[in-house]
Length: 275
Ligand code: 5BU
Image (tube, protein in one colour):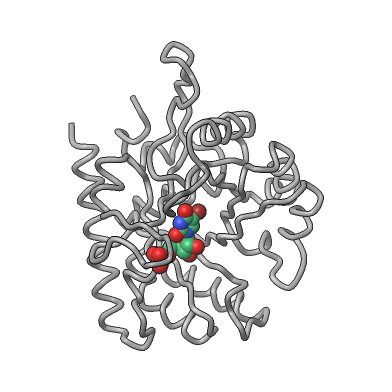
């Protein structure tokens, strides 16, 4: 059956990539398919938000280059929170260069992403060499890569044959490419029904999720957890401002929002797998 009709636990058993396995197991253990995207500029706010939403998430998504007062100790603190609250870490780096350059960007610099981020992502635009470059660093560390097959923004160019080519690229590197950033399932895309690969199980992580507004006035477009998980078959909802809003000090409001999205995402999943 199509992967999205199976439970996260069943899928965890079959996945060979350690990062994919860890994410699926964490989702099942915490009964949460919610990822929170923590896009704030101060290290203090970053850690405070993660500590509040931590109990309700399977994954924390970072843009580590947003932090204005970054020091290596922030990573130690992030890792401690990931142990305390049992979540996976995903640096949303969106690599997009030649293999040699992305390998250096992934392993080195100030942020040393590969050393702490279980999952990262890349634009397929350079072609398969971006996967080879990143996997030369990430595969020995047990990391996983998501390709950006689609985007949530109005007017996105990642559609049609571009999306199809991204899926084909992923199929050639299934030990390292664990899935996609996309708005719907990618199973069998670019194949005829008799060709489709039976044991293909790509994870779909989906940004552009919000319950209260339909956009942000800068091109972002929001759909509800139910539309994303039940109607479109995606595996993880990624929510940023819908949860932490404009004021990171409102701890109770943030906690309540995280629970609300966690509950909605999980209810949509249960409705999806119901026979
Ligand atoms: P928001 O506050 O829920 O709108 O934040 C969404 C996050 O997901 C933000 O970090 C974006 O960089 C990220 N994102 C996205 O919104 N849409 C996309 O297609 C991709 C990433 Br890829």
